[in-house]
Amino acid sequence: MRERVIINDVGPRDGLQNQPKILSSAEKILLIESLLAAQISHIELGAFVSPKAVPAMAGTDQIVAAFDKDQAEFSVLVPNQKGYDMALAAGSSTMAMVAYATQGMAQKNVHMSREQAADATIAMAAQAKQDGTTLLATIATSFECPFDGMADPGIVADATARFLDLGVDMVVIADTIGAGNPGQVRSLMNRLVRENSADKLACHFHDTRALGMANVYAALESGVRRFDASIGGLGGCPFAPGASGNIATEDTVMMLEQMGFDTGIDLDALMRASDLAVELTGTAPGGRAKAWLKPHLAKQHLNKNDNLK
Ligand code: COA
Ligand code: ZN
Image (tube, rainbow, N blue to C red; front, side, top):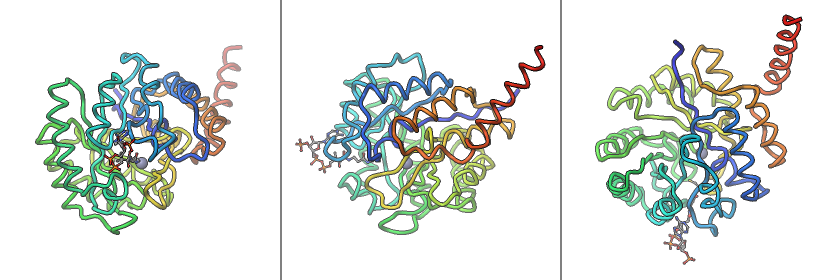
């Protein structure tokens, strides 16, 4: 049996939060429906953040209300307690709280210190247990920060262990600006897998320096089996200068499937979702693989039809 790798598509959140064009709720719902049609099992639907800070994430409550919980594992990003409370009230059952490896990013993103954000994460983990919700903690700028420079792997390791000990369900190691290289990823993820458990860890990469797939490979070698990716390679953080698109779901799924892993994702339907992301935003780069993958899939179908004759 092929080994499963989970892809969590963060396109509707990380992908859309920084686009020049703000999508309507109806357009966001269309995009999410196309991801569901591609059998994507994990999707980040949006964020409960200040609409003044991130206008593109306004209306996330409508997006949450538009989907049934049994369609996929839906999550939403929350930056603080208020975001958690709003997400809970909207009916979300998985919240992704953001913590930080560096002070600069914490201050710029949420006007908190790294320690304040970590304490808020731990308080939220306790509340999540009471509420019966799942709490993910993303550690932003785990490799490099646009304000403070290199992150300290020891800080990331301590935060990861503390979060998991104190009830966070999963820690997502995020390369917010896409500055990490495969050597750094292997070293950090080897340590985190050794000190914790691979099934409590995920990675979130941006493809800024074209190292996204190499970084996925390095993390896979360390034992990580869950990755955030974004349809069309959309993405970027408005508060992290230099952050460009996330790794494209298209590239990630193609690489994993060709390596013999099972993502459960339907590549034909994924191409349609990718086309829709381009159509809706006008900017989605579409990843690197699509230019080869789309005609290749079409040719495969043609050959299959030939065989049937
Ligand atoms: N959702 C919606 N509104 C929120 C909120 C949340 N999670 N947290 C705070 N607010 C509102 C407050 O109610 C207040 O509203 P008002 O101006 O109408 O009174 C305002 O935001 C400021 O609140 P305050 O507690 O002073 O927060 P702040 O100014 O220190 O921080 C944040 C504002 C953190 C809410 C805002 O910067 C934010 O939403 N950042 C998110 C960043 C983000 O999404 N980054 C990308 C993903 S990592
Ligand atoms: Zn990101």
